[in-house]
Image (cartoon, rainbow, N blue to C red; front, side, top):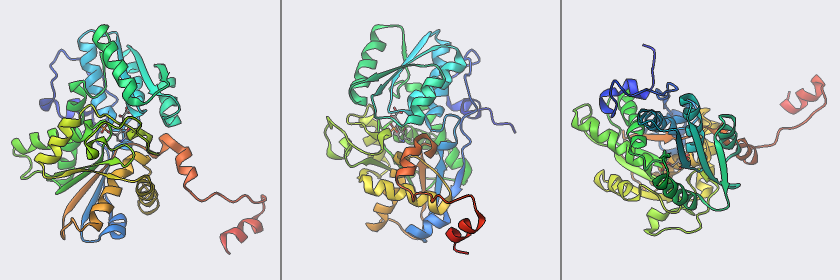
Amino acid sequence: MHWRGVIEQYREYMSVTDQTPVITLNEGNTPFIACRNLSKAINNKIRLYLKFEGANPTGSFKDRGMTMAISKAVEAGAEAVICASTGNTSASAAAYGARAGIKVFVLIPEGKIAVGKLAQAMIHKANVIQVEGNFDEALTIVKSIASDYPITIVNSINPYRLEGQKSAAFEVCDQLGGNPDYHFLPVGNAGNITAYWMGYSEYYKKGKISSLPKMMGFQAAGAAPIVYGRVIENPTTIATAIRIGNPASWKMAVNAATESRGEINMVTDEEIIEAYKLVAATEGIFCEAASAASIAGVIKKNKEGLFNEGDTVVCTLTGHGLKDTEMAINFSKRPVTVKADKTEVLKVLGY
Ligand code: AN7
């Protein structure tokens, strides 16, 4: 069957009617990949799977929520939408806004988003405003503008965003044929962990799965407000996507972790980069650095002895590595340059 995007696939779980114009780029249906090599490198007694959200149309999980947010905004007659973003939300809003033919305003922290994400917002003709400040400051401005003017906010405080994003949990269950024992994911503004928990809980209530996974959220150590229990004024991390000091869905994310008997924890930038390189080298999967916080979380918890034999562990890889090629190049071996000569090349190859 032709895949028509997450709204059509999971229509009965979404707040849409026959009147809702469905704005979609056929997002979702992303690869769910069994990772034996990675599992061997970490713990060969667990069953490790990656949900590769970088395979969405704009290269991140945000598309799942954006199809709902933009469709509902168009249904309500909105002419313009606005968001603050560490990059992926703005890329997705710009793309879906272009498809809908509405104006898109995005506020991004100047110099702190990956260039691929900036390129996306620009080529889709969003009105891009760089703020001399961080994401949290940008979001405060955006919230205020959206309450004063007829502009729809499409950050994850827009409830349709989380509704769309919960489809990822449905897909994991559909692809796995049941629920995992643990679900690891990076936490920034804390919307995604909240959405997954909504999705798993709905599937559980419907009897589609027999138990619920423990939700394991990981922040970057320099941007870990939930772990420390206080707002971080100047969050710092190499993983710019999750450089957030005051998450909008803070309480709901804590609820998801508590209710599921999981946790919100943190990993250092070094641990994130190690995981980012490991999954690329052992499984051929190129995710962005922030995404690798989930795998870094598995490595950390495994060292603490969390897992039992046969546990099914899913990590969400939230965004594509191609968003930030500078990062990949910085952390990889440099290519060698030789003359255009076969003998010279063979010398380098070791033959
Ligand atoms: C790759 O784009 O907040 O905890 O403005 O881009 O739901 O915020 C991005 C977040 C993880 C964190 N991985 O998800 C934005 C933005 C990637 C991301 C997160 C983000 P949430």
